[in-house]
Image 1 (tube, one colour):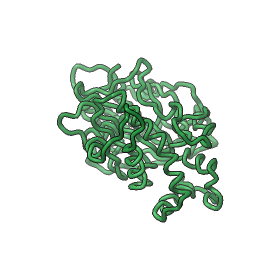
Image 2 (tube, rainbow, N blue to C red; image 1 turned 90 degrees about the vertical axis):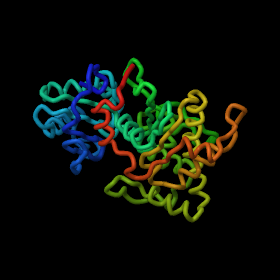
Image 3 (cartoon, rainbow, N blue to C red; image 1 turned 135 degrees about the horizontal axis):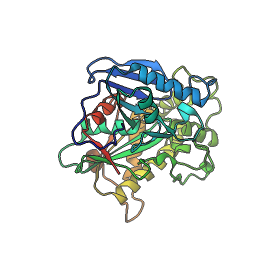
Length: 345
């Protein structure tokens, strides 16, 4: 059963929650009262010699092995998911370029039919946690945008207590929308999905590295290997360079924030009831105030009569850039599991 499955009554609280990413899987039993256990994810990133079929079987075995008997298991999964069926469309960190849909929910039910499986995308889980922490009375719709190794967004309609999805069970895969930028040099960069000129091709973590190389910023900066957490030398260099007002770093920040600012302008233009928007993910938290201040500066600038710019007071009421660990996919999965937010097409 996925979070989208109909129910006449609320399900019992999850007795297992998991947050699955390309590098780590975090597991916690009970209702968020115990510590999380962190295990290496059975992913192409960690196990490049394994086939996609083997990695998928490994994932099913890991999750099924962690679930107690007759458990309710709420899973936050780092991939594009059909929330109506539990089918995974793809995940580059987990399974590389493989785009063959995989019915993960069915595989979990087949392996452990005694468990009630609630499977949601990790951004959906993050949105649920963000809503719980930040939504105030009177807020109509809330969005959460993650800018990390990938870019995606979810929106909840709080008047209906629902996260709406389309007929494919999807919502908010904005990282693969066409890139909006005035920086001509950034045209033609490739996204992780293999296509060119997507939002994520410039504004994601890997996109920032591609943009820096295209702009000629990487010379003398990006040599050497990634550290154990997968952080490139460029990303380690950038915060300090911004502190020092290095003009190369400032230009790179502008170019990589610009597409996100354009996206947010579009969101507020087409949905004036989007009363609260949160931003998180490794890029936002890693660059901290530098990212927040640049984004707010760009959003304050008028672009047309339809977008006259947003005052700092207006942004204070509607825009939240989250700090490290402020939004937790594990907590969000548990909230989804308790039907605090339902999913509906």
